[in-house]
Amino acid sequence: MRRRTRDLIAAEIAGRRSRTETLLSALLRRTKSSATLADIQALIFEEREDRHSTEYFCDLIALFNTRHGSVDIDEVLPAIQDAWNYFPHRRFRGECPAERLLSRADA
Image (cartoon, rainbow, N blue to C red; front, side):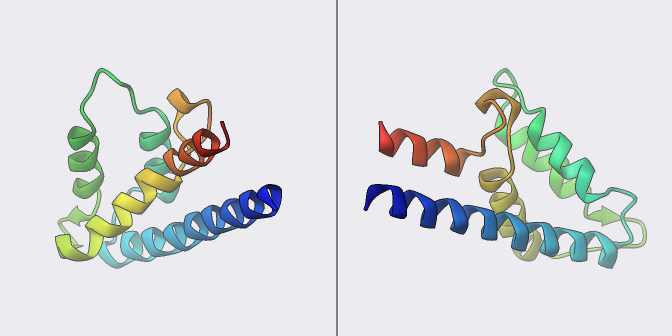
């Protein structure tokens, strides 16, 4: 039973990650940003503990404010929060925060 629950949660995490990638890509296209999904993933992956997460959020939000257009903060912020929670981080050995919570629940 526990293995099945873990597999279901892992599938939900993968689904959330996929939906977030799709949404971020669409928002980047809409703003004609020169940034890519890979840029967002790299910024999150390279996150360091010595820099506050709000600094990263500001950097991520700035990717969507271009001279060609911008998106409303209420639209982009939930996507960025999901990216932060569901994209891998180097300091978590390639896991995302949601996966870390899942592994702690198993311990």
